[in-house]
Picture 1 (cartoon, rainbow, N blue to C red):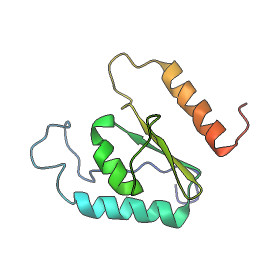
Picture 2 (picture 1 turned 90 degrees about the vertical axis):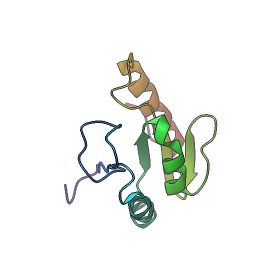
Picture 3 (picture 1 turned 180 degrees about the vertical axis):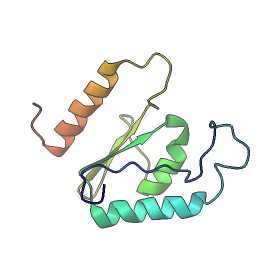
Length: 112
């Protein structure tokens, strides 16, 4: 939403049936990395969650530095985190609750 608090951006801007679709995921990749990085720098969101550990090299290109062992880092006022992909096998709701609590703690928000 234009005035919303949440933004979901895909690394690949083209629709594909899966991660193994030939030729789709490399198209416009460098441009997308630059654009996403610039938007983070311009808008300074409180936090950014990047899904999929297989894309970690791309997430590090966006952030401009490597993630620590906890898969988190700060870009100015923004806390960035690499998370497992939501469709990862065996992922439980507790994973997301723990990630949310950790992010809130990192940015100093009160956990409700």
